[in-house]
Amino acid sequence: MTEQRVVATAGHVDHGKSTLVRALTGTDPDRLDEERRRGLTIELGFAWCVLPAVDGSPPVTAAFVDVPGHERFIGTMLAGTGPAPAALLVVAADDGWSAQTEEHVEVLDLLEIPGLAVALTKADLVTPERVDAVRAAIDRRLADTTLAGAPVVVVDGPRGTGVPELARVLAERLAGHPPAVDHGRPRLWVDRVFPVRGAGTVVTGTLGGGRLCVGDAVRILPAGHEVRVRGLQSLGRAVDEAPPGTRVAVNLAGVDRDQVARGDAVVGGGPWRTTSRLDVVVRALPGRRVDRAGAWRVHVGSAAVTAQVLPLTDPVVGPHVGGGEPPDEATGAVRLLLEAPLPLVAGDRLVLREGGRRETVAGGQVCDPDTGPPPRGRAARQERVTALAEVAAASTPAGRLRALLALTAGARPGSAALAAAGLSATEPRPDGVAAVGDHAVLEDDLERWTAVALTTVGETGTDHGRLVAALGEADAPAGLADRLPGHLLATGRLVRTPTGLATPGGAAEAAGGRRDRDEALLTALLAEPFSPPDLTTTARDVGLDHREVNRLVQAGRIVRTGDLAFAAEAVTSAVAVLERLQAEVGPFTAAQAKTAWGTTRRYAIPLLEHLDRTRITRFDGRLRTLTGHRPSSPT
Image (cartoon, rainbow, N blue to C red; front, side, top):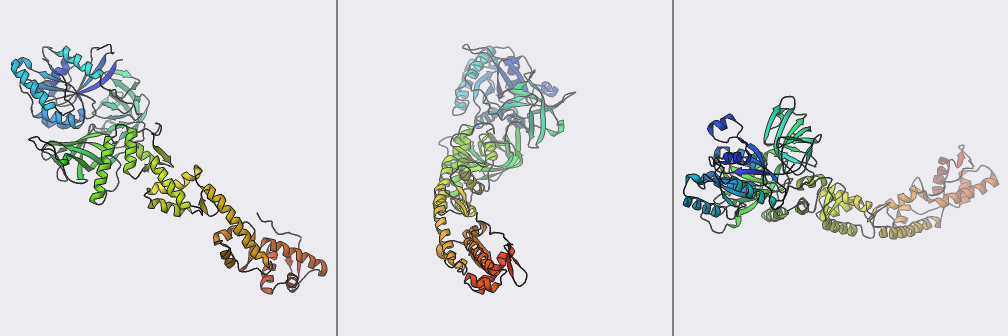
């Protein structure tokens, strides 16, 4: 099967687009009886042909999407043109450059769809001088557009004159046209839906982003229906798989005809997210203005959605109709609030039309399809506009991901970031981007926040809450700040300690200092082992806080009883003294134990009660007897 390229027609009504497609392909693209009766294209038409091989290259199949030329059907024209990668402009020699020629070229230019050629039709109806004049007007009008330099070929569709030459020009131009890239994220904007008896629902469209295969599980967005690809056709032939950049008919299992409509998208791979709030860099046409006022309609892919337009700074104003240098505001950034969500990614092209004036006003590029609250203050809004321009300048999904992360303080939740940039979850992580938990992070920012974390931890360590707060003060997004300590633990940059988090070197140093402080406390308690000093005061004097004291208690190195605390070694010594006492006198009284220990009743009674509780001694109400149990050894 030859390589396939999709080409959309464009041009004013009755300039011969459908006739020309029929001459090139041998197929009438007008499917409706009304279209044939009126000689007027109302719906999208489709036809294809194999173009001649050029310069030893294999032949290419051109799949034509024939669009209506009447101004009443501009929405249908946009639905067919939006997903197309290239266009063929048709201009009639007798009418010349007309109103819809102008608007169609504006649309192609705003969508940045290159023009392969210009077919100058109906030349047999005018003089050669008129043909030359129209050709010159075409060259002048196309200057500074994406169709600039497109060859003009004089053709007569009904007679076939010039059609072979046009086919050759199209083949040459398509040979130099880059093929569609497979990013593993197929998205087919639906432009037609129809039922097939015995097969179910079929949708058609121009496939982009990745390939579809029979049996694939896909979703229909924005509704979210989960369906399966039952069958595929491309150019009238059943196929097992369809690559990106091709016209495809998809037989879907699991969805009814009335659950799918033009403007929906069949998507696979992923991740995919729908959005109704997005930031867009736009360019206004000459004499047009983009601001809050207006009945705005956004056209993207095959979808058309009502929207509010909120300029991020000033209204975007196109150049004066009379020409001259465009004003500074000719391009700018706006926030679009869509009436219905769409599955958009950074880099998608769209057109803005104003319904009240029924005119195309501007076009733009989606920069952030997952935007948050609007920035406050003019300086912050202007800073965001500048950052959005960086996203618009990125030419690859990987570059857009890096620019999107820079747009949001260096980090975003991973799946949302991949969806916004148009990257598949299976693609390798782009250079300069790291993963921290479920977040994607710019490596430079990660190193900056890591330095903040290590500085915060310092020599003495800190706890998780204080570290997260410090990262937040350093502008780390909340979700990332909470996950970064775990990432630093997993990568060995931090270690856990009994009191929180520390660097490996700091933990070792802290452990040495803590051992010294531990020994100082125990030495103080053992100075008078059976009449120990107050634990809280002594711990403070040697530099230990209550958490470190509790650690020693839990380790069994300090024994609490009542409001007193004894060193574990003192308890062991106390039992040894009682063993000697019992060997001399047998069962003993509290007074005898107090005397043997050389202490006072204040210390002796709590210590004896501890020995009773731990079953080291047995008390009958007057005398105590050692049971033979020994004190537990400290851990």
